[in-house]
Length: 120
Image (cartoon, rainbow, N blue to C red; front, side, top):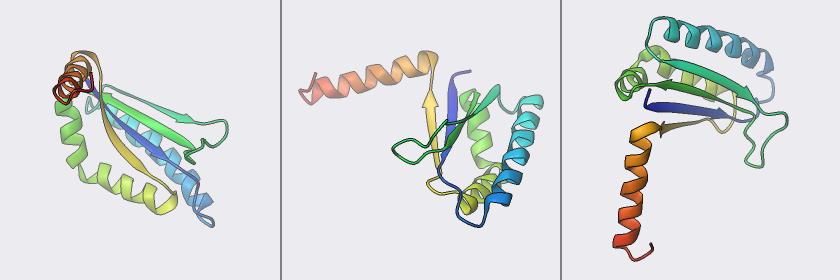
């Protein structure tokens, strides 16, 4: 596993609370199916005890290889689930993250650019 997709979300849009509860359950089942079918290596979901300063209420981390996550990002059901989430909650964000050697390589690239610009 070398990469992750981090999905964060904020407050539920008023009047959509029941849909949000339903979507949370469906999303957990969907991620479990992705893991079972080896489309991702693993997933974790988190809810904050109280909202963060940015308003985030929770986030999910889907882990896998670059190839697994590239395929997943193009998957119609994955995209539809993102559309559902953004229709029910505020401030939805999808971000790619790297770990292991890929993370170290990215850090070296950043350091090289800063040095080139005279910031290091």
